[in-house]
Every structure is written in C-alpha cells, then in structure tokens.
Length: 247
Image (cartoon, rainbow, N blue to C red; front, side):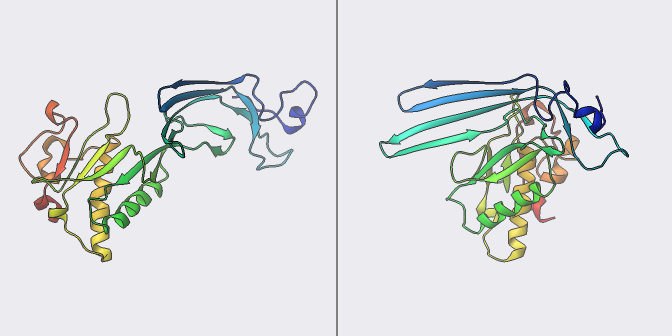
C-alpha cells in the first residue's frame, strides 16, 4: 500500500485522485425469439484515493484504493407488443470493493418472493426475516420481490414444518423454501409473525450455506431420526419437524 501526503499528491505528474490508469467494460448479448440474455464485466484498476477525514500535516491519508472486477447478468423477455419483463443481477460474484475509499460497493443482492398459495399473514413474516438479515450488515443484501427470485418461498405438504437446502457447487443459494402451513398455522398477532419469521430466517440461513451447530446429529434441532447432516444424502436438505419447532 502506498501513502502520500496531500502536498505530495497535488503536484504535477502525480496520478489524479479516483482515476485508475486502466479501466474498461465488456458487454455481450444474445438475442432469442422473445428473449435477450446479456452479461457484462467491469474492470477498474488501482487508483489513488483519500477519505479526507484528517488534515495536514498531522496525517498522510492519500493511499491506493485496490482495483476490482465485477460481473452482471440480465434477461429481457418480450411478453407482447406492450410489455417486456426484465431481470437484473448485479455483482453476481459478490465482489467486495470500495468504489470510493470508505464507501463499499453494493453487495450481492439475494431476491426472495412468497407464493400466493401461502397465507397473507406470512408476508409480514418474510419482511421481518429479510430485515433481520439486512440489519446484520452482511456481505449479502436481501430484497423482497414479486418477480423472478433467487429464493422462492412455496407451500409445502408433508410431515415437516419447513424444508430448504444448501448452496450448489456454483455458489448460488438453494432456490426453494417450502413452508407447511398446515403445521405452522395462521394468525395475525405479533407473536405468530415472529414465530414464522424465525422459521423463514432459519431456512434462508440454510439456503446461503449455514448449517446447524448440531450437524453431527441434526435430530436435536430438526427432530426426526438421528442423522449426520454431512452425510451425502443430506448435503442439500434440511428439515424441521413440528415437534422440534415447539420445543
């Protein structure tokens, strides 16, 4: 890392602040009959920068802000002559960078939607679960959507309370959470909202890669038979039984 005093920085021949020597964009698109798929890569090299928090001559606060590369993807689908639906995914590699020193770039955004087959009271719980994660200021940002989503919350049927899975080899989150509303129930009071929000938060955690602390015997947190979570047939699945959830 290079540091300069402000008097050194603002001299002829010194690099301009926040202006990389090398930068560029590459974009490509592929058009089908009704859809266009496109992607882009932006490359920004190292550049001199400053937070301008201190004054000369006490501190030397001109430094080098590291370069970065980010990638975006998008799809446009023409539904009819008057309507086109588009989906955007920014910073798909979840690169951490400061566009300006001290101001981190947007993290990867995970979009979540809720099936209309689930009770309307679950909508507030989804918002609460998303808020809990965003309040932790993670390197991931979560957002509610009514369209295409990274994680879809759907109605489930079976002997479980809720079920989801773990990220795939491509690093993307598991794309489905199933909530068994027959076991979970339905109510509009705050206690019930927090209860459902906790279930959803639990399953979102699995979708982005969190495992149980009792992974060697997942029956403690999820009920059911004793099962080591790292076993091959459970690599992409996590379930919670009604009995476990009520304990």
